[in-house]
Length: 335
Picture 1 (cartoon, rainbow, N blue to C red):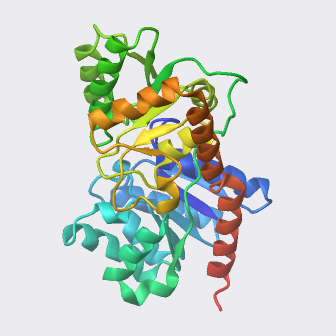
Picture 2 (picture 1 turned 30 degrees about the vertical axis):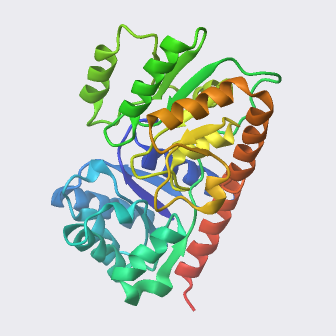
């Protein structure tokens, strides 16, 4: 098995990190796997990649999509057409109904299996490619961040945001709420944890510069273990996703897996099970109210922390790896 992604530094590309952990887990189960991080997605670069695959001779190539590293290149799609392949579509429903689907269709032509991360995504893809319905399988995400219970006893008054620092993730909303909360709540620590992806470094720097006078702290470039440690000491997380919470949000699974009661938003992907495991806030005022209760009400905090961890435990790496091995075996030896 060859897991093929673009090249990216750890912590700066969630899909790269996910593929690396999946590869490590497969090898831990004695399933032969290699992670190829390929940089040049032009025609010449594709020829180099094919030469590498000829040398390795994997039974399958597993391509992850989307990745900003690919740019406008159609080489990943072409790779799944000319080699036995599995494709994971991490966020298919984000793409527009015409051009977006046109870019996804080549993956569906020849991929022996197409992995999506939720039932919502499966229905979306099957809706515009019904002829591929029998090859689409749901394997939920697992967090790249280790689960952690945190220190025993009450946690410090700490409000956190965790995720990639790029537009469209709700970071600006968190910063507005955190600024209000920090001014009104003596002793409250407000913390942003994350790293900019390669094309959003300027965006993150501008936000930090604009808020330099506020007490909000920024921790960037941390290892997965260090992120887990920081989340394990957090009292509340606020993750206001513009399109709502869902089981495909690795940052949300990380927060819940570390037992952090999380205030977030609802959307079309928010399942009933998830709704009972988080605090839903439709706007900043509701978020402030829910955060304040979690900071002050110990019994409510404990109940939500337990619900958080119980939900996240459904999405463990052991189960994700088991499902991938079963999928690869069925794709290598189709009935």
